[in-house]
Length: 325
Image (tube, rainbow, N blue to C red; front, side, top):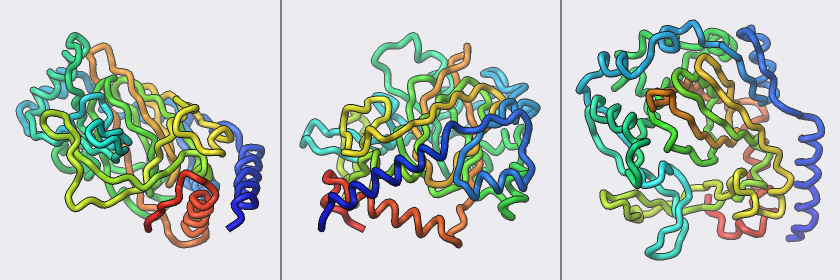
């Protein structure tokens, strides 16, 4: 197959997209359902500054309140050596790059919260993060559900559905979520502390060097244990914050969008957008966020076109030869 023509096509596609699409919009009030659907149709993100500032969670959550509500309730915690759960990691034992999953432990919320708050004074300590993506705000963290909206009204009306999952994220500045994508329309609400997003549109698949990686899980001693039986997953190994490493021939054409969310801010992250997330703790040493996942609509042309763009990107990139579906 002549990859030179494919490379030219990918380059033209990326260049044209960025010529027609600039930075993201920042809104000062909630969009109407109709306005929201315009962004969905274009698959473009936006920020609503102070969009959730009136929620009880934004106004009342602090360490004392969280402790008083949850006390000794057991919660599931992700543990990693560097705050790098669900990321591409080279295993020093065999030299291979794995998609690395965290060690998961059950721990009382009180102990978890104390650990987060005291971590800045401990060197070389393990990083803990509450990051279960299983509708946990209506599960193990249900006592907090009353402090937030049950759905995002303008999104629910526009999409004609309720959220498939509502997730609470609790951590500190030690955790970073690696560049990845989700098949959901995502409404993100910042509650405590701040978060920094690096966003790439799905059309930039050719830039992010997706490779099919074997899976591994951190053991209690933080060694990597390959999964058995082992399956591979497509995962981006290019980091927009370290652009000269693991790059493809198209990485230089990427134009990352950087967004900071402070308490009360909201972000609409369209389906399939790549995003890397870092965070900054509050003065009390914690960071809390809520996200609402709405199932993406598989009808129409977007889903099929996105699969096509992804396959073309893999074909046109010399780093992706051993592709498995």
